[in-house]
Image (spheres, rainbow, N blue to C red):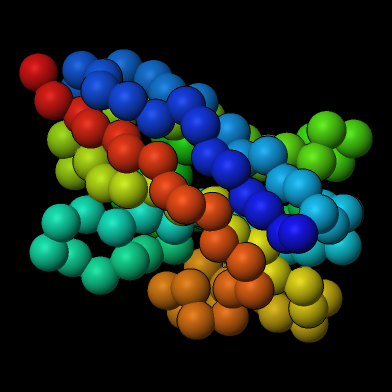
Length: 129
């Protein structure tokens, strides 16, 4: 059974940091591009950061320089390190994977999740003083 389980969300003050993890089971992460998406109340889901199987990355402009996506294929786990958090980063964060090697990371993240094959259940991130 394919599963993606996120953890690491929570409440943090502006300027703080969080590290999200996404543990995959039921499949081998090596063969998938990975991504983190978020959805704030009343807003559409957006791709925050994506990484191809080969390590190419994409970041939403508003998180560049603050967020870092990574993967540990040996642990079958995906990470999102978030530093310098801002109130506008608040939302439910979802990890996602995509099988095709022919989809660019720009397409994966920019599609709002339309090409995602599997989703995690989401983890809440709240940035507030």
